[in-house]
Amino acid sequence: MRNLIFCILAVLFLSSCGPTKYTARSDTWTHAYGYDDAPLDSTTYQVTYFGDASMPSNLVDRYALYRSAELTVAKGFNYFIVMDGQANANTTTSTMPGMESHNTTIEHDIDPQTGQIIPVAVTTTSQNYTTTSYTAHTVIKTIRMFKGERPADNANAYDAKSMLSVMGPTISR
Image (tube, rainbow, N blue to C red; front, side, top):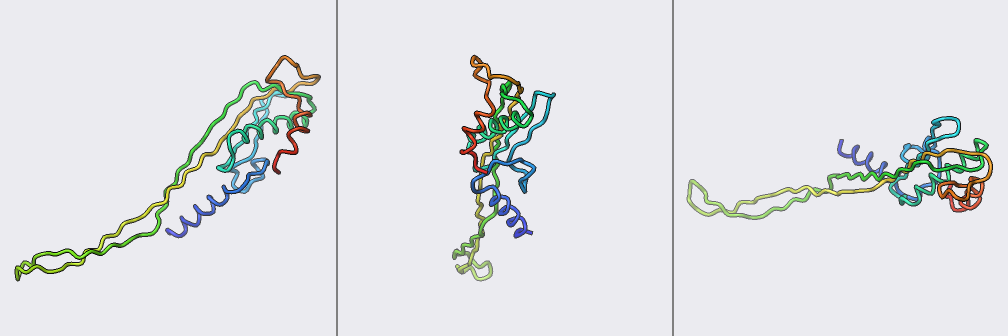
């Protein structure tokens, strides 16, 4: 049973290692990372990017913006405005039992029948534990998509095609 738990935890840990690629959450084996989007109405979407332990928060935010640009172009719009944004960090800590260590010492006791001091072997066992901790970031953006030219006076307005061409080469697929 202990080996089974160790194997399951090892697989989960190894699946969270390495560089995370930009992808849909539904396309990942564990559904632990990637983007999801949900329509709120015909021009408003909630875009979420779930990072894994290998992704820093700024990369998760970039991936959420990139997905927003992709969605805007796919739906036939020119630009989007980020109406609301949230960032969350989730830290998970797990503790696994490691190797047991045994320590035998010789102590002395008095034999109750003879009254003589006799050596007694005392063995103690201790359990070592390994603690692993990681933080996964999630970014949620509520966007509204528009046609026409992006308003220059709104810092939360993004030209979708421009973002795709500029950010595209930096996105790890």
